[in-house]
Length: 341
Image (cartoon, rainbow, N blue to C red; front, side, top):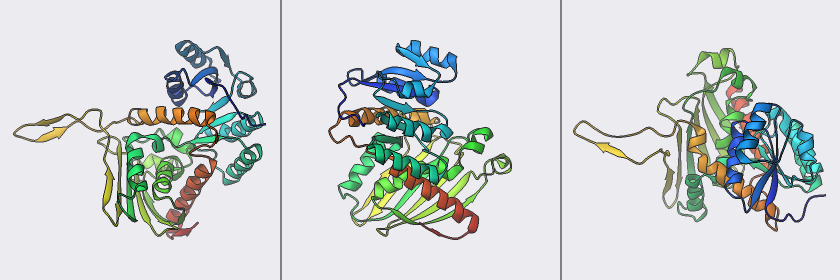
């Protein structure tokens, strides 16, 4: 049965203490009155011991099921490899736990639908990690749109380019650019526009590294046009490499005006002299660019576990919708035709 009441602080168990798992450890440690880490799990023992010592965590295990079924765990944070996500979500729901899962839920629609059914059957809270929704810049953008400051939205342009491509070994198992990288932009487009996508058209190519195509069977550069049920058209421009750093910009154009979000920088210093006016490059690592977002996201999860509604602000349905858009983008790119959803 799903827990109705949990007394603060929430007891959190984390499966996977790699880079993102450690990031979530730091976020939880920053709000000790709201939550504490009661157990961590990883197959790599040196990481387990290091993180346990760093955050003074009472229990460690190499077995995810031990963590999921532990009476000392109220909420399970899943940061394991993608192919383990679905099983761990389902088992956590059966055990009556609150659930936080890194994206993607799965790279199979059939499995995502099974997870959705099991979550609904258990009446479980499952929060899916689309951290950009909790970034202060994106939140301000959403606020302006929700308050009607741009009026009726006509068009949305999203630019999302990484500083450098991931290793080829990662590309091979990532699910492809559209379901690994662009999936964040598909979610953000839905979140900002407040409507569902009905058609997807995509052009993509390999412009950065031939190995991404030859060895990874993927692309590194993509332009997607999304048509929404409410008539809004959005373009999403992705590339695996921008030589100048993380390029994350959005423009929303409507009947009353325009709302824009520019890149985030490590500092706001500008140097002016007789030869030029210049400033430092934007952030070059996603963990730096989205540090606030990751912290805000985890605190939002902790807060919704203790709220009366017990409802996740972003859930499996959102993960499913973004996955379907990614799948359609790949199909459109391969066929050269728009794909209806």
